[in-house]
Amino acid sequence: MAIKILIVDDVTETRENIKRLLYFEKDMMIIGEAADGEAAVRQTDKLSPDVILMDINMPGMDGIAATEQISLKCPKSAIIIMSVQGEQEYLKKAMVAGAREYMVKPFSTDELVDTIRKVYDFEQKRRVQLSEPSIVRELQRDPQVVAIFSTKGGVGRTTIATNLAVSLAEETRQRVVIIDLDLQFGDVAVLLNVVPKRTITELIQDINQMDPELMESYLITHPTGVKVLPCPTRPEYAELITGAHVEKILGILKQSYDYIIIDTPPLFHETTLTALDLCHQILLIVSLDLPTIKNVKLGLEVLDSLHLKGKVKLVLNRSSSDIGIKVEDMEESLGLKVVSHIPSDGRTVISSVNKGNPFVTASPNTRITESIRELAHMIMQGEAKSQPEPRAEVKKGLFGKLFK
Image 1: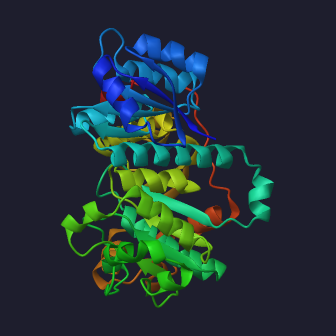
Image 2: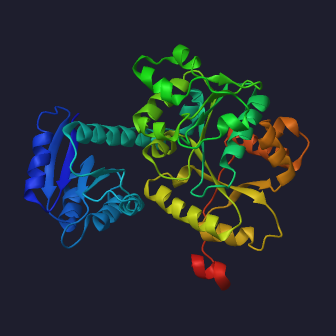
Image 3: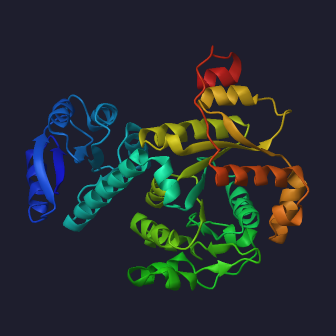
């Protein structure tokens, strides 16, 4: 079945150029075009396209406003934003509005075709995952893919990710692998005290020949049995890894591993979005300070626009009752209940980090270790469910003003 495409751009020449670029693609079909946002909304409602190529700057209703309306009314139509602006601000606005991808003009035929296919494939997989009964997934014994994510740095993502991976290996006696997807400045190898000989950079050079057996040669074995796929050794190598690479890596690891833990960077990069799209659960890490809560709130809006909020489980790190911000106020602001409280224990954590020895093994009798074990059990049993909280009366003061 051909991918049904709607082209939206106020410049006739641009629409014609796109049609020429896609003319020889047998698996794609242009079913309509529009010159402004209002026409795009009408055409989408009438034609139900699989993919919409949407320009940002148009007279009347622009591409962002049109994307917001279409995402709400016709969520099955995946939107790819096109723009001559490549700034991060435009990218953020596009994702918040509900776009699945962002392309900077001018682009080549290969770039356009690959992006359309990738977005369409992801959308098909998402629909299957959302519609497939949980009992069927259980019978298929689908391995759990868990992403550790936050939109704020310094909240303890990697510490939680590494200790959760070790705890899962100890509690389940099953195969666990952790992927360091913080491709520029990842610390998984450091926190686990392993020395990478080969990383994800070398792995992608063999990606076309990759199978479970070859994959094993790129993984490092931690003394606890957890396997590690390290991040690149140099920050500039990060740009070599794409979302397609991440998809292929996850597909191969799922053939051999029961739990796949992904440590992500605090930003919405293509590789991060791919991981979030393909994982089963997103552990969103938050702490009780205003900058983190503000960033997490914005991140939740983006995840909601991408139809990923249903996977999110809120984890409070460095939980303490004497900080000043109440957990209940934070939950009310974010619209999610905290499913796991990781207590503040600086002495245990810092000692663990500096020695490269996970505290779940180095300090097994501490409260912080027990909280990680409880989180691991929730992952194992599928009990880590968060429910939206009803809006209450807006609180007064700085916290209330910031999030009302």
